[in-house]
Image (cartoon, rainbow, N blue to C red; front, side, top):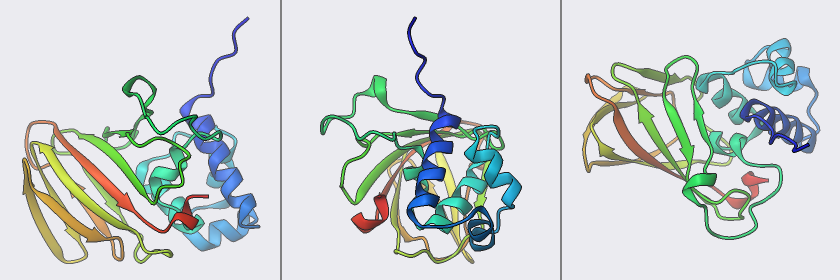
Length: 195
């Protein structure tokens, strides 16, 4: 009988448990640090919750890692190539956006690439501010149009436009159109945060 690979919620659960243990944080300490209730963190760590992107961003910030690292496999990839068929996809249960981790998992690279399919009229707002270590992103719109708001600054991006930003204040993404937007997010941070 073949063993089923772990579900994405199970993978997220394992990563959150491992990262919390690596940092020596109790459930209570992580809850206080990231503003997510202890009971919700416990549900996520048991794989009994389908957390939203906003909730996962709070956890990632509290753990000192980029959001993309919560989707990584517990065992590093065996090589430097990430095949399309093996790239993980996740759908945010709140906004319906789909993210696909493009970069090879588990590598020591400080760069990570994510592709996003953003539904019409969808909005995602990340409340977290400055992160340690500092996280840089570039958002490159491949198809469609999105609005990115950084604190009080709003940027309307169309196909081919690219926005460079530092995740140091609340950030929101909005698709003001009636068509799916597709964009890539390139994330760079210090390698020590990808443990």
